[in-house]
Image 1 (spheres, helix red, strand yellow):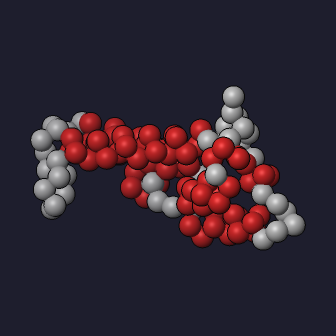
Image 2 (cartoon, one colour):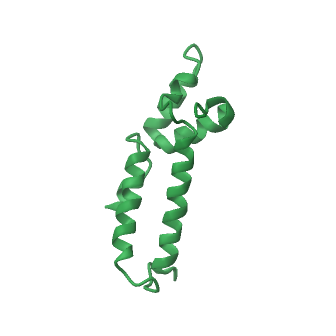
Image 3 (cartoon, one colour):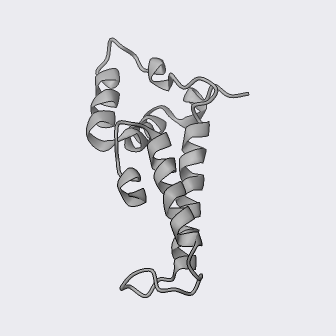
Amino acid sequence: MGNQLDQPSPAGLMRNLAGLRIQTQVLSALAPITPYDDSGRTVAERLAEIAQRREALLSLSKQFLPAPQAASDLDPSDSELVSFFDRQKTLGTESALLWLVNRKGASNINHGP
């Protein structure tokens, strides 16, 4: 279930974070040296990967706070707005936000202090 929630989705980053939280809770109940998968990774290694992913998602979301309507920075007379929402719908919110950061640059869209 946690893996399914952490898939690209137009539902937003909260869904990804919820999926990571579920995975963390389930894996935390296991011994850290328990094998996680056939590649030889342990539960501790997977938990470290999850923590890194969580930090990356939080860092990405902070670039748009406190104004979550970062898409309003896009020029509606251009195809940017349509591209943003198309990307969000097909690739998920995370990919759309990464595209926006790369397109506009973090300094141009950060509404924080």
